Amino acid sequence: MSHYLVNQLIHVMWSTKNLHYQFQKSLKSDLLAYITTIIKSKNGRVLATGGFSDHIHLLIVLPPEISLSLLLGHVKAYSSKWIKSCEHIDPEFSWQEGYLAVSTQEDKLSSICRYIEGEESRHQSLSYLDEVTSILKQQNIRFNKDYL
Image (cartoon, rainbow, N blue to C red; front, top):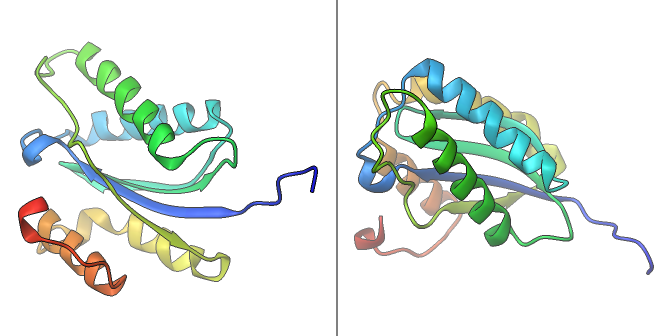
């Protein structure tokens, strides 16, 4: 085929390094808009954004010409630089090294969007590590708790 016929739908999440940094709501909103701009500049699409004070969730359409790892490398590098340029931000801020990414299908998009949009209320009673553990179990991904 001479054309890309690809629909890579990926739910991605990652946290601040060691869950140390807590975003204010106003900064998180601007950060998610900035991350969306980065992904669009790489020909990706963002279908949903969310997160809590210490982590980010995205539902993206991954463009066929770039790997997820390379795209998220750009997102983390540029957004980290942007965060450090904001007033009253710790200059030692950084993202965790890894990320969690799971593929999905068109018929699951609305439920994943609702899930991502419900982050604020969900984390009133659920920690980031409990959320990650739950997603890993749902997706049947083997993991070692020492890596979380």
